[in-house]
Image 1 (cartoon, one colour):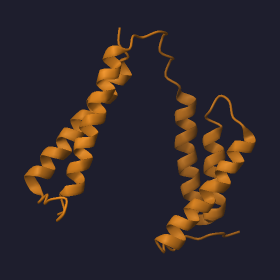
Image 2 (cartoon, rainbow, N blue to C red):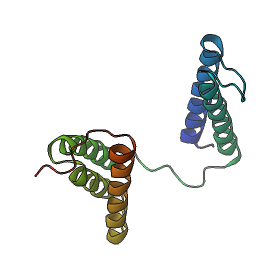
Image 3 (cartoon, rainbow, N blue to C red):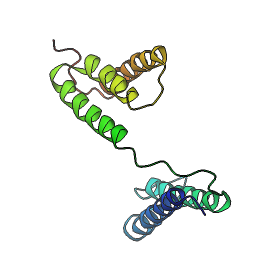
Image 4 (spheres, rainbow, N blue to C red):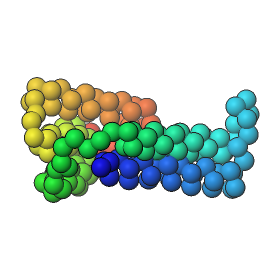
Length: 147
């Protein structure tokens, strides 16, 4: 018996990559590596998605299912969904400096085991990176701290 989730993932990646490649070739001008046009990047992404999908399919076909698949875990799904919603609201009301650490900490509660120093370090790093990318780099007007 093969891992059905791996097969489905591989099929999804390959199908989406094939769709992207076909749409890109039929609607956009691709150009050459020296003279890239608007379809060059989507074509590369589509081809890479097909390659990833085929690799996942090959791995699923070669590996045997050793243990049973765990039951669908609803708790982590709800925690991650709730964390995204809460951090979106906090971003607008409390600011980036509050929203990103709360997001990381809430995400960590979805894991069965967590290392709190690692979670806090990740929260700090993600906050700093988010500030540097979105505020400094992209000049987005995101509230930093609204308390």
